[in-house]
Each structure stands twice: as structure tokens, then as C-alpha cells.
Length: 343
Image 1 (cartoon, one colour):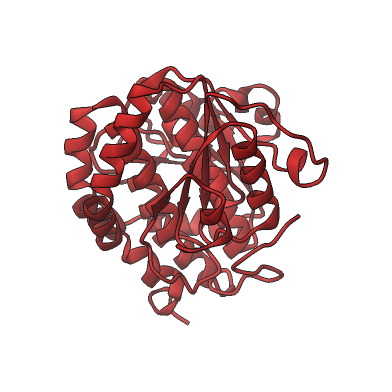
Image 2 (cartoon, helix red, strand yellow):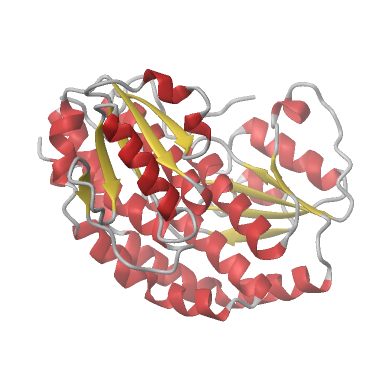
């Protein structure tokens, strides 16, 4: 099997086209939502999702809090689906993110949020899903059918939809202009050569993936994909959190993948990468560095909010290639299904 023949590889390669269609088709809806949110500023935002969609929610949380100042939290789905608690969310919004829109715990949690007074925005790839039925507004992700169990293009479509929503909400013109170029950049990012990371990861059994701020959600997504598709025990940390204990495990030969974007977090990530290298770790980092001990993975210059989306696109190609090299089929991870219906 070649990586290029897998559905994961082929579907990830579609992301640029998918995002171009999505941004254009959703623009009127996003403008209307932006006007509504400006006219009725939420007192809080609740993010609901599982798996890759939960990772997209982390991206949303950083973006909402930094761009709007609205307090944002991830929903604990079991409080509604298992404990049947009724949240009090008058004046809040609930942003629900899902590929299938079918998971019972997600639907129950979002229905409870709406009953509790929240204005519900569902970003979902499957229109007409149970999640759409309990939402006030559905934002179609428009990723199309995704046949590989490993989500790729639907995750990227979630991130681009989140970025467009917040840009319209805040009237962030630089971000809106940058979004226009995102589809082209996604195609370019998928062609970048991250193969220098293949050798360190092919024989690895453990790995840290590190990001911060806007990039923390994609670090979590990368770690999840390495578990799902490569059988690799990967854990994601923020560049700050990893210093509070987990760094003690890093010794000679321990692989670390850093995915920093070019914003206020970049300088600290470079310091951390050098600290890891000084411990003998095999450090791989996106973007240029002057430390010769660190393996550099090419990254495109872009708006800092969008750069993590480009990094995960480059990573997806690496993950498909690594999965095949480690003897896995990335389209059929063991013990996993495309739709996970937790209660």
C-alpha cells in the first residue's frame, strides 16, 4: 500500500477545494450571524464536540476569547446526557461542532443548552442530522462524504468555518482577507515535505506534540491522529503545561513534535525546543530555527490565526505516510468507527 492510495491522503488533499466552496457558500449566513452576535453580545460561549470536533472547539475557544473577550468553556456533555442536569444559559451561545451530528450525548447536551436559554449554532457536515434539528442555526461544513475513519477535510472545514464566523462577528478585515487566500495555501501546505520526521517516528513508541494558543487545538488533533492511524502513544500539551511535570519524562531519544505559529507564542516555543534538545530529545518543529539540533519542518507564512490550519494540513500528509510505513491502514484504524455514538 502507498500512502497516496489511501482515502486519508486523498481526502486531506481535497481540503483546499472544500474550503474555497465553503467560504463562498456560507458567506451570507456568516455575515448575518456576525450581525446578530454584535447586536446581542453573548455573556458566555459553550463549545460542544467530541474527538476531532472537540479539538476544533479548542481552536474556537482561543479565537473567541482573544477576539471578542467572551468567556468560553468546553461543555461537559455527560452532565446532560448522563446526569440529566439542566444548565442555565440565558444570554449565552452554544457552538456545537460535529462531522455526523449523530452522537446521542452531543445531541442531548446541545438540546439541554438550548432549553436552558442558549442560542445554538451547529457546525455540522451532515445536514439534516439530529444535531441540526436541535440547533437554532446550522452552518454546513460542506466537506462532502468522508469515507476514511480518520477525519481530515472535515476537521479543516470546521476550523475554516470557525475562523470565518469570528472574522464576521468582529469585522476583522485582515482575517477576512487572509481567509480568501486560505484555499490556495492549503494546497501548497499539503505539498510541503515533512518527510524528515518519518525516520524519528517510524520506530517511536511515545511522543509529545506541543502547541500553544491558536495552535493548541491542532496539536491535540495531531496527537489524536497519531494514536488512531499509527498506533503511536502521542500526548498533546501546551508549551506552558508541558513544563509542569511532563517534561520530566523527556530523555535521550524521546521524540517531540512542536507546531508553533508565528505569533506571540513563537519565541517561547523556540526556547522550549532548545530545552528539549538539550535533554537529548529528537525535536521536530514547524518553521525555521537557528538551533542545529532541531529538525525543521517547512511552514508557510500566513495570518497567525490561519497558520495552525496550514500546519495540520501538512501534518495529515505526514500521518498518512507514517501510518503506512508503520504497517497500518489509516483508513481503517483498529476498534474505531466513523461515527462514535456515545451516550
